[in-house]
Amino acid sequence: MSYSDKVIDHYNNPRNVGSMDKSSADVGTGLVGAPECGDVMKLQIKVNRETNVIEEARFKTFGCGSAIASSSLATEWVKGKTVEEALTIKNMDIVKELSLPPVKIHCSVLAEDAIRAAIGDWKKKQESAKPVASAVAQ
Amino acid sequence: MSTDVRVPQQLPVTRHSAPQGVKLPIYMDNHATTPMDPRVLEEMLPYFMEKFGNAASRNHSFGWAGEEGVETARERIAKLIGATTKEIIFTSGATESDNLAIKGVAEMYREKGNHIITAVTEHKAVLDTCKRLEKYGYRVTYMPVQKDGLVDLDDLKRAMDDKTILVSIMFANNEIGVVQPATEIGKLCHERGVIFHTDATQAVGKIPIDVNKQNIDLMSISGHKMYGPKGVGALYVRRKNPRVQIAAIIDGGGHERGMRSGTLNVAGIVGLGKACAIASEEMSREAVQLGGLRDRLRDRIMSRLDETYINGSMEHRLPGNLNISFAYVEGESLLMGINDIAVSSGSACTSATLEPSYVLKALGTGDDLAHSSIRFGIGRFNTAAEVDYVADRVIETVERLRELSPLYEMAKEGINLKDVKWAGE
Ligand SMILES: Cc1ncc(COP(=O)(O)O)c(C=O)c1O
Ligand code: FES
Image (cartoon, rainbow over all chains, first blue to last red; front, side, top):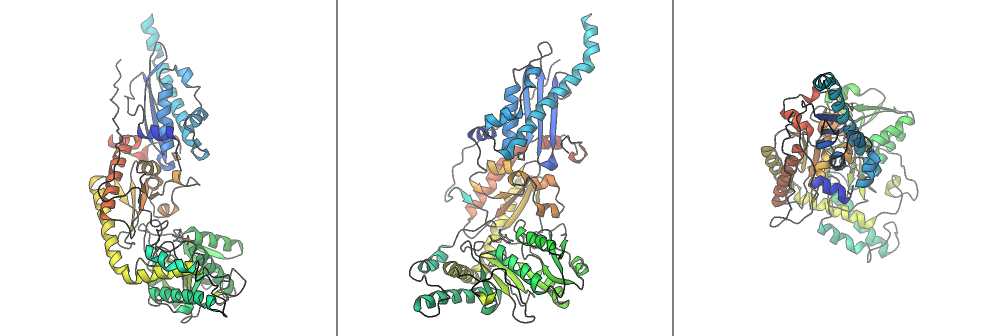
């Protein structure tokens, strides 16, 4: 398997590696994949409550170089976007950007799943926090 | 509310310069193939131009020269494995030898029975040959192996019945290097009048083999796994006690006693012969040397990294083989990090089928650890300095990738990964 320069660059210099406090109300965490399948991605976002803009993103990935690169790229792309904008990121955009070969498309799918899972987690937190928020606003 | 953003790990990539006496890239994948020994090449060269004759041309000196080269090779192979020259049949490699042995016996002994026994950890050349025979009405038992990779002799005994004609169990495994108890398997077979074939592709020239003492009836050999050329191999076929007969799968001019037609690959055969002659001379010393290098690699890696697991028996193992799983790190990403070193992985991500190694699965290694496995194949031309360099690069890369691994982080937080409900399952 030969890798594209972009995959190699993300593998060697992964962007936004790390973790944020998953119990924080502003943080959404997505954990997708399974160790038995050889790939697990954890992607976290920190969202500004007023603007819905993703201000921080972090990832950790167990998987091949293409999976690492896909999730690294995903954190770069979601940063600065609103959650709605982030949801429009498609795995095929990642495939194109990283020139992934067909056998590695599922690694990009996992990255898209991770974005959705992180946003889903954040939204859930916002909903359960809503009554409190409106009470404060009154 | 303030969010605790931990400072991301700095993960610098170090530029690697080769230490004194080490030339990059390093080849440490000697189970896939070996480089040719220069002495083998030297012996082969005349057979391309001056001695190009067809070994089957009986009427002129060109043919005689070719035949002489072939017969010398036959003697050398026979000597290495304790056989006689008439018991050596040349083929295009171990894949063909496995096919010839298994299909040849299946056809020849059809009236006696239709049952074949093999093991789940065999090479595809054996497994897929057996699968094809199932389509033609043969019954095949694929024996499981124990945790250490060895077949259980009592299981084997129980698997045999009065329709069993053949047992095909490899001498040494190509992924985990585990050496099967060939002598005992052969004895069991002979007590029951069953033919014993062994795929010894990885073992010939690496560890001592004696077809008589070890009760072997058919044995597959390949040139390119023992510092000889690719595309040439041999099948040992026992001629007495008992006399074993096989039906040909390639028909034609009746070469090789009718068992394998086709003009002989003289230069290749000469190379295989020379490789065997070198092995006869040097094998015992080389095994000690490779075993030492292998243990050095293992000790250096395992003393610095926790949660690394050796796959397969350490005791019954080829001297040059090491197969290790590095928990929480996926094998292909590890290979990518050590890209100036040629080794291989049992991870699904490296395979066309996206399935992890079936050999490791057969040991009961969890899929997660199969994805994390690396096979090191140390060979004749590897040095201690190379071993140290490889160990250090592996350690550094595993450490880097563990910092990147959500599984490592979870494990460190005390989460049992087996208890997690994974979305992807
Ligand atoms: C155990 C075993 N059997 C058979 C083969 C096939 O050998 P060849 O490449 O000579 O066909 C190999 C090599 O991949 C092997 O390791
Ligand atoms: S994670 Fe297995 S191929 Fe990418």
